[in-house]
Structure formats: C-alpha cells, structure tokens
Length: 155
Length: 159
Image 1 (spheres, chains in turn yellow, green):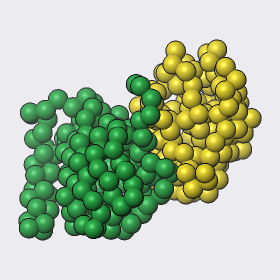
Image 2 (spheres, helix red, strand yellow):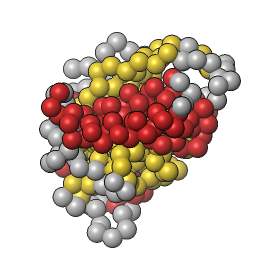
Image 3 (cartoon, helix red, strand yellow):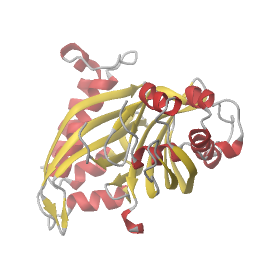
Image 4 (cartoon, rainbow over the protein chains, first blue to last red):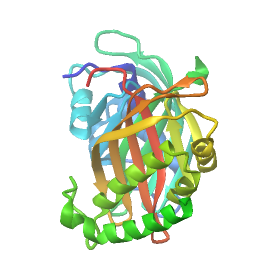
C-alpha cells in the first residue's frame, strides 16, 4: 500500500463537507443543487470514514490526484480509507466553494483546510485549493475526480 | 492564419467525432454515434498546442465561457485570464508535451481525462520545468465540445 501524504489528506478533506447535509444517498435534490452541502458531505464522509456513502458517491471513474501528483483510483483510495494506513483527520473543511456547471458535469473549486496526521503520525496539516469534478448519472451527482494543490498564497 | 487553423480544427473535430473510432482505440467505450474519447484526446493536444504557440484565438475557441483552471500553487484562473496568459508573447516559451492520456469518463456530453504533462521552460520568474498530473474536463456546450476546466498538480514523488 502506498503511503498517504498530505495531498491525500487534502483530498479526504475535500470529501468531508458533505457531512453537513446528512443525506444518506448521493442523489442530488431535483431542483437547485446545494453544491456547498454536497462538498461538505463529501469531505465529512472522508473525515469520518463514511465508506458506504463514498462507495455510492464516487463514480467508478473516480480518480484522486494529490498535491504531490500521486494519483489513486476509486478502488485504491477507498482501500486506503478502509485500511490500516487510513489517516486521522481532525479538520477537513472546505471554504469559498465555487461551482461551474456545464449540463451534466460540474466543477467545484474550494479552499480546503486539513488538520491531521497519517498512520505514522506525520502531520498532514495544510491549506489547499481543490479542483473537484462531479458528473450527473441517472439523475444523481457523483464525484469523478479531484486535483489538490497546495495554496502557496498561504505560505 | 490562426482563424484558418480554427476553421480547419473545427472540420477536423467534426470528422473526428464520427471517424476517429475507425483508426484509434480509445481506452473507454464511445458514446453511441460518436467517438467521444477520440475527440477529446485530439482536443487535449489542441489545448497544449495553443498554449505552446501563444495561440489565444484557438484557446478562446476551445474554452467554455465558464472555464476554470487551477494552476500548480493553487492559483485559480478564469477563461479570460488563461487566454491572456496563453496569448502573451512577452512570456517565455514553454515546451509542453503530454503523455499517458487516459479518458476516465466519457458520455455523450461529458468527458474527463487525465494526462502527464511535461513542461520545460520559464515564464517570467516562474520556472515550470517538471512533470505535472493534469485532469481536463470537456463538456458539450450548444452542440460543440469545449474545455470546461483543468486541475494541475506538480509531480513531486516517484509514481
């Protein structure tokens, strides 16, 4: 299993914000999609380890690119979240969420703060700008990709 | 010159939409009646060529109005900002090459792909030398494929 890096935590954090909405399924509301709730639920689920939600919310095409360029497929990433190398995340908080909708695909950008450590105790604290892609399939929005970047303006 | 290029490109993509499947083998099944994977793989190269050639006109043609990109370092840019950067010949030349293009998702109106982009060169004070993991998103807007956005992360670890 590849080690988890700060970038991975950032990704996890990006999934966490969805938890605020407390929705059981990944199905989006029919009318106006609450993108902030979706983002929070996503990151909250990664932070808390709500793998049932993530299994549904991540499309099979899901790919995660961490801030160091390391990439993970859905299977690989969920495997990490289920396994002994799972990071501990105290904070996975997206802010300044902006959405760009193009029909059946939407790009969310946010500023994600991560506080936590990997399975070996190494700090994963950081500030990241995230590029998140969600697609609409069978009426439900699913995550299909994330690219994390360190926010150098915070250095 | 650039206008002619855009026209030629449009024709090429129309043809490619229906015919690329005959000569290529995209890694994802095509949507019914259209080789989405083949089309966006071509657009991926068009995108990089425009960036390399300071071809702002082609970039403006390719990018959707609501286009967004996150550069390494976390800087967000809009369509206009990205087009202006591409068109700015005062910035230095960059050698840009993509490889390992993988179509991660393809539907009749959406495509998401990743590639590994190698950049050599400096622009202003920024040294771009290195390899990057790039996620590019394409969407069909009013019947034409457009670049919707991109996220770029510098590769700093052995893969």
